[in-house]
Length: 258
Image 1: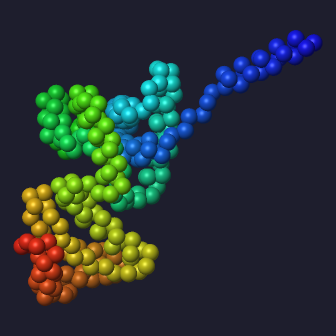
Image 2 (image 1 turned 45 degrees about the vertical axis):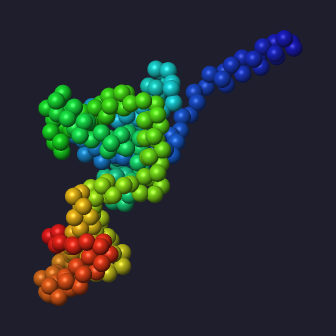
Image 3 (image 1 turned 180 degrees about the vertical axis):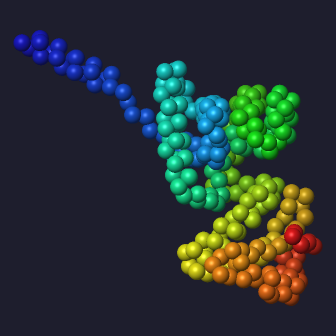
């Protein structure tokens, strides 16, 4: 009987050991997947497979080494997360201020011209075109594969630095150009929606050429029954005062950015 009981205990132990382990995504991996949500959400149904393949390849670069069976399970976890969060994003399109930098994104910034040239040479896809993204991940992966371990480690350190503090001025200039107006429009609408507060924004920034530009942003005409501040008041009275202030702060001449 004792022998039988011992055998039962071993069998139970083996059974427990064979139970599938729940794999959870780390915060870093979730942050990385969030960066792909815009492409994943906007992709058409027939494009989803190619987009997911590109995402999985990029995610694997800095993932722990696993065998093929484990990697297949992990890919399914990624896909499930993307589908679940895609639905949330479609229900509520919240703007994201700032970004979580990854080593892959840093390497792209360091080698942007090379990556874009490879994509165009190999696929014919033009920068900014609809087919760019599905080729982009593979091109960055090839560039990364050619880098030394020291360069890859440097990219990891740089990603942490840019995420925790801020990226260099040339990248801030790119963000100002691409996202600045979007951020201000979102801010104006949220202040009206949440606080019933009207906002007129004056801004100034350095562009990628190092020039200082200034402008205004006004959405009041589109909010409730409001009138445009720009159309009902004389901006020319305010403009020179703001221009003078901007020039003092940046230490150089400033120009109307439109």
